[in-house]
Image (cartoon, rainbow, N blue to C red; front, side, top):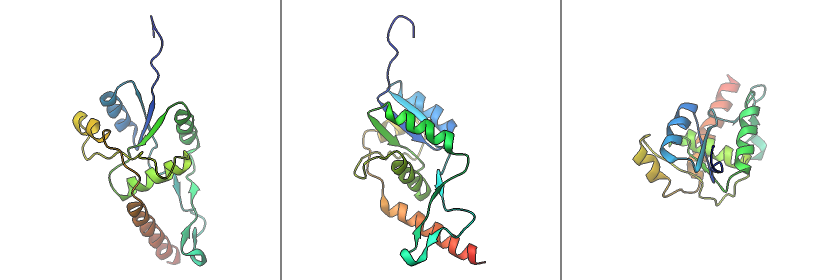
Length: 157
């Protein structure tokens, strides 16, 4: 930037898609870096059942193939900011994506990093950032239960 120092963002916002990232970035301003996770970052492995039945149906997640560069970019960006916000979709899939991202980025479990909005308007987005919350583990567990059941039934067939 000519004539002065480059403004430094103090927050990273992660959404699911690049189109949302661009729009939300305009609404939030220069103090926010907005990036896309491109959907889920981890899943059950395709080559095996991926569920430890003997360990209480514990899922065995792996990084989705092809996500390495996105994850590296998100990790590097998270190191340059004071705060990370996870703004995936407001459903159980989005909550699970946020949870996986939080674990990958080593965010504290008690961190109020989850931001949810039901419409992508300037007012809705800005309002959502006034009251971030913790990740809703009930929604995460609902998504995991559904994914595990789908796998157990689908894998056996």
